[in-house]
Structures are given as structure tokens and as C-alpha cells.
Image (cartoon, rainbow, N blue to C red; front, side, top):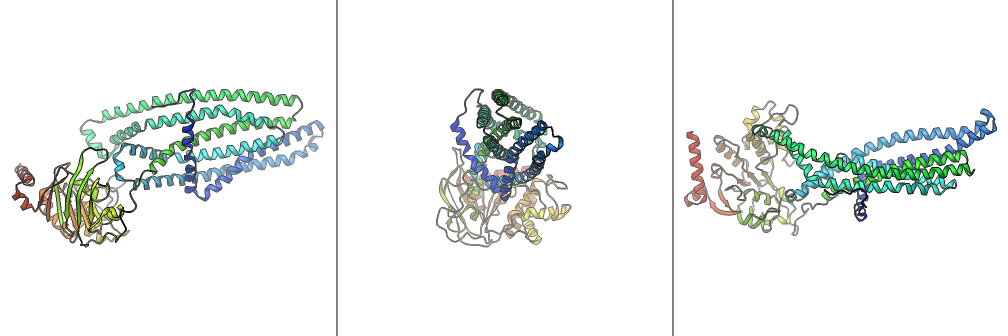
Length: 621
């Protein structure tokens, strides 16, 4: 971890480099709050001018009061006081009103800004290339952006508002003092701010260096916290007796954070104390000068009161402005993490080739089907080829199965077809055209996918299945048809509110499902999508063998006319397909019907015989 020690000088090139984020940071406020930003600026301007006006009126009141006392006229001589006193009352009232208005507008802005930043993060998370999710650095950026989006907007607005208000006050005070014949006092106030500025920059850079250094450890504490509190890990953590070990690991990391944070705060405190002492020396020198001017008769009592109050308020405004500047700089540094995340390359918005006819989205589309030609692919950061010399032709309207050992590359085929990744060599064609000639979104509109670990949406049965529909509110009849295709009518019949049953235990009155039941819901969702190509990754892995045959008949009916590719380990599922392709070492090693492959006596035949023996043994047991 790198921190700036007391007495070190900041790298001003780095300061200037980080300040480049300031215009974009302010642009976030403008884009999020719109016209409220203009109103906020006007209110802050008024708020910043009021102290200078109060000082000027204070001089008038004090001088009028001294004149009345010297004249001995009593209350009759105090009439000159009435107007400035009344004006001071109006200024005080205006100060209260503007403070309340600034608070209300700023609260509104904070909500709008936080929502705007969250939207940017969510949109970018759905737009970046999938390969970024394979890099820890991406998760570091995402962690910092998400973690800070909840509180940085409020601090940012406080800092911007405080800096603008303090700068306005200082300029107004300096104008009043110069108008009264003193240019020295504003210069002294600026010199007094130097030590505070020095300390603020050092503290901000040191905190930023520490924050970047602990991101990976902080993400690990979040991981430990998730394991200790999440529902999906609760059973295994208890069964294996892992809770105590992970509690201890979490506490060790938190203890390290506390030690480093306290060390950082100690360094910051020393710098702030040094800056305060230097500021007091400057304040003392200014006080001596003001008293000397008064004793020499070069300043009235009102002028003395005004200059003293101006110095006190100026010092206060200077400290507030410097704190706001440091806070603004800090938030700009941290929001640099957000901008770095938003700058990550998105998926291409169009294909690399010339535009042509859009891919078909009709579920009954014919044509040339799907073809894979000479694919070579390695996952980012991996030296092992997931696919090597992969060739496969899937005729339109046919149902094919892909089988093979774990790690053979079966699921990778789906990921490339969905354009989550781009192969290093080779190409994929749908309807005779390379998919790289179309944007990823267009390619995906022609596909429906059941992944091996589908998302368990906390929604009603009808809502969960209807998520994949092309229209916003598909009929219940269509949902029921998809559930029949997935063989899930019996599941719905057992639920308390049928299709209106809330699934999952995350929210009140939810109903939990078994792994196989969740898979049936996901399968119905995949069948709900009216597209020509259906991809199913291990659709029967959680299904009992009694229901498998009936389910495949239902699937055939639901996907009639569609091109269907099934990845499976179960040969009892694969044998019902039109063609079976066997994968090994990232390529197709055998193809044919079940009978052809068994007769060939190759890898498929050996695995089939072994799986049949295991099944017979289980049945006998």
C-alpha cells in the first residue's frame, strides 16, 4: 500500500491529471438534475453574497451607534440605526430561507444524481464485452463503482456547493474590504490558506492511494460475508463446519483494514494540526495589524468591527472552501473509477460486414440452419484451447445433441453462438451469413437459450416464464403452452396460487422450488421465446428418468420447425435427437444417430455401455 508520509510533497502532475475528471463530474450533476442545477447555483450565489452584505451593514450600525452615544441624544439620536438594523433583519431572514431552499434542492439533486449514476453502471454492465468478466481488474472497477455510487453523489454535491458558496463569500468580502481601502487583509487571508491547501492535497492523495490498494481485500471480505449470510451457501457451510473458519478469515481482514485506516487518519491528523498552527500564526499577525490601525486612528470602531468580522468570516470561508475543494478533489478521484468503468469497450453495436437482410426471428424459419467452420478459441487469460478445429453443420429445423466429457468445450459452443465471445479464428453462420455481420443483439434475437445454471427470478410463475416473450404482456394461454412444452403443468398444480405464486424465498410469501423445478421454469421460459433456434444446455440434468421420455416428446412438439441444439451428458436424452455429435478436446470426433454410433464402437459406444451398466446397477440397488 502506498501512502504519502507527513512532510512529503504531492505529485502535482498527478493532481493535474486527476483534475481532468472535474468537468465530467460536474457534467454528471447537470445531466442528472437539469434545471434544478441552475436554481441551485442561483441560491448558492445569493447565500454566498449575504455574509459580505451583513458585514457592510454591521459597520453602518456600529458607526451609527457610536455616533449616537457620543452625541448623547438618547433614542432620538438612534434613528440612523433603524434602516441598517431593519436591513440586517431582512438579510438574516433571507439567509434562513435560502438555506432551507438549498437543502431541499440539494436533497432532490442527490437522489437524481445517484439514480443517474446507478443507471449508467447498470447499462454499462449489460453493454461491456463478456470477456471482461474473466478479469479480476474488471471486478475491481465494478466493485469501486458500485460501492461508491451510493454515497459519492451526496458528498459530491456538498463539495461543489460548499466550494462555490465559499468562493462567492471570499470574493464578496475581498470586494468590501478593498472598497473600504484595505487590500492587505485579503492577501493575508490567502496566505493563511496555503498550509491548509497543502495538507488537504496530501491527505486526499494518500487516501486515494490507500483506497486503491485495499480494493482486492475489500472484495474478498464481501465474498466472505456473502458465504456466511447467503441462503444458497447456508447448508454446505453448516454441513462442512466452515462457518468458524470463514468468520475468523473475515475478522482478520477487517482487523487489517482498521489498522491501516487508523494509521492513515494519524498521518492526516498531523498534517491538519500543522496547517492549523500555521494558520493561527497568520491570524495573529492580522489581528496585530487591525489593532494597530485602530490605535493609530486610521480606522473607526465600525471599521474595526467590520475588519475583524471580515477576517474571522474570511478565515472560516477559506477553511470551508478548502475542505470542499479537497472533498471535491477526492470525489473526483474516486469517480475516476466510475469513468474508467464506463470507458470499457462495449459490445459492437453493428457487425463488421456490410448490412443486409436482418436475421429471421420467425420460429418456423427455414434456410441453411447453423454452421461452425474451423473455430479456434481460447478464453481470455487462458493458454488452453477451448475449441480447436471445430466444425459442425446443424440443418435448419433439426434437433441435434452434443455430448462429451466435462471440459470438452460443449458450453463454449453456445457462448460463441450467442456472441458473448469472438473466436480467434473461424466463423459461425446463421442462415448462410456470418454472425459477425450483425450486432450481437440482432443475433440473440434469433436465439432462445437455456443455460446450465439458469437465473432463479423472484417473480410469479407467469411473470418468470413471460420474461422471454417478445411482447410485453403475453397471454396466460401462451405461458401455459410453454409450461406444457417444458412438462411443468404438474408443478403448477402443486403451487398454492398456481400461476400467481411468487417463486423464491427472497421476498415475503414466496415459495421455494427444487433444482429440477427451477429448471422446468427456465425451460418454459426458453420455449416461450418465438425464435427459429433453441439452445438447451443440460435440460434434463435435474429430471428423473421416468419423466425424460415424455418430456422429449413434448419438446419435439414445442420446437417443431425450429433448429434445436441440446448439450447433454445423458445418452437417454441424446439418443432421441436426429443427429448426435460427440466432442473431445474442443472438436467433433464422432457424428451420427444413436444406432450408428453404437455400431461404430468408438468413444460414444464405450460411454453408452458404461452409462447403461451404471443405470442397471442403480436399478438393482
